[in-house]
Image: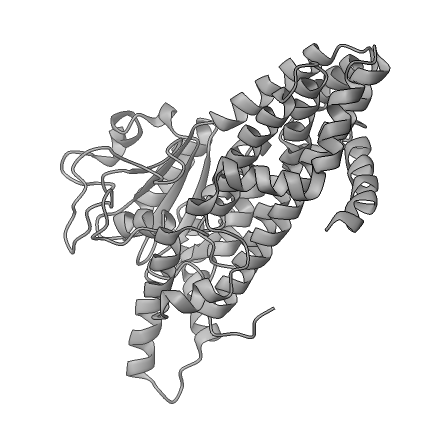
Length: 421
């Protein structure tokens, strides 16, 4: 790996230069405003390393603590609880799963935090029009202001109560999304009734057109419908729903939701990789700030702490941990050993301070020694030490991220029984 460092460092320099240019397009994955980028750039150019580090820490702390509250509503029996379980990668019998059943099981507001990202909460709201939640007072009863957006589920035709709810949500300045659930049940029923004439794409088109027609009849102009199978989100329109949310949510909220999404497609894996890459420069800059303080081992200790958490976060989001791999194997009826066999990087449980120190020693041992020595040279020493630490941390994070992203793709393709990459 050592021979790649010069080329990688050149790429890192280009990446940092592009990021610090203040280009608004960078905000999508860096989750930092152009104004904050300008403040950081001015602090660095003015030699105020502490100010720059403080601003970056503030941004990262804010991003780590973003709360996202998603309201899942609809009529009784539309599959709200099942959807909430599947989107959090939980089975109905898992700890923390929403209660499911053939009758209405939601009697009040039920919050269900994501097991890996507890700041993301899916709220199972009572069915519209149930005895205790009449449609005319529904939004007040379910505490409307709490939620970032609403997903309105329906398993048959959308009716006046759905349209009324959507209009009220829109009037109050929030987003809503219509999702037609249990599409797989409709397809199976159609196939049994008319096996010779069965055409999946035609039936899906008819379902979508019928939903649009019903909502337009109730005064909803150009409604967008997402067709879903609650048990298999990799089918039909879930990816389109995820992409719509990504574009319509503020960048920091979109980032939080993306990391919590189940790894059901290569596209989501690539988006997660891009989101993590957008954050690497901040972690490297924090390391560079500490490296400018001439205390032996301080920057190394900082880098180890940063890297351990970052690498664990990568594995967790990509599903490279024992629990996630076991669930994936069960879903696709594959031995978990087959999935683990295609993984080249360590699992989340195997990442420790000792592991990170070994990586740093292998890749940047010489750089760390130089970092300490030059840190005693006034001004120039601080900038040089910071630059070396920045490059070491950036290289390590970027290399490991590339490895786990490739592993996640191999695991998904193996589960789907497709050709390995």
